[in-house]
Length: 222
Image (cartoon, rainbow, N blue to C red; front, side, top):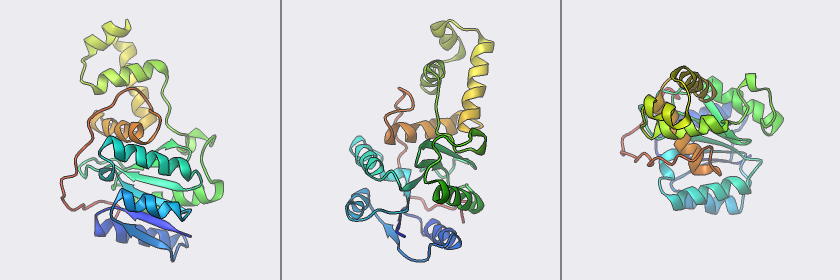
């Protein structure tokens, strides 16, 4: 079984290798240093799992390259880590049938659970939503609210534009947080940024990518 890890942090690479070992993946783990290297490797291999740091696809060209890799490998499980190390997101969100978005604060036990589930099911498309494996989806109204909310519009503007009451808007925001498993706007921002980068688009909002600062990670993953 082949696994690719595209992440600049040595601590993260070590932790992932340990987690994979616990799942019976002993060999075939390769660490890469660029999206171009990943694309080239994937031309001649069908990896079981690919771990990618968000900071490796900061630009539109990179996004399209990664989209192509994901589309060409529907049987590969992709983990995408939020690139900002200050984002404390302890859960995970499937954005496609084979793509997980999370942060490095995710626990090893959770990664092991996801890998076991994927190896048995090969995807979580159609799986029980309560198990946490249903791909992220928003209604038309939620998408409109999310676009304006993440763009910085205030409550009055959103309510006026959509002709809804503040109580209704609050209910929609609560539902968006429930679907994203996120406790605050900043986490949602990063989740949606990634989702829109590597899929056809969860919604119409396209925030500026977060730039990699070059600082070493010290995640809960390790």
